[in-house]
Length: 94
Image 1 (cartoon, one colour):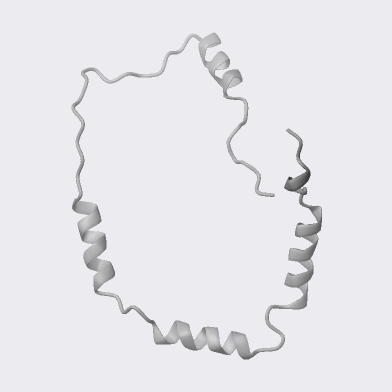
Image 2 (cartoon, rainbow, N blue to C red):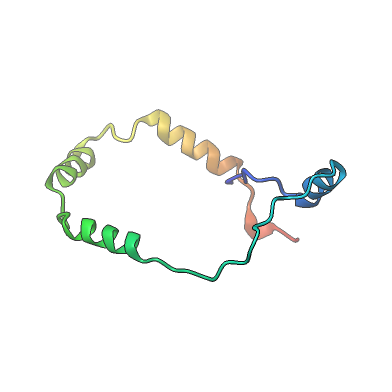
């Protein structure tokens, strides 16, 4: 199970801020919506310059697939233990 890194009870945090007497800073004047696609364009151009298949990564994958000791037994045991410890969501009655 993946645990959340954010608190599940946001109302307690809001109460704490209100009790401290501090209000969040607000912008001085409303701004109009703005969308810039320059970053997306630059990213797409950089991706277009990359090879679709990277031979060094493919060779590494082939080597790992051929290695009978990969993944290590400790990793398999650890993943198995995590699976066994996770809740069965099909039985959740909430």
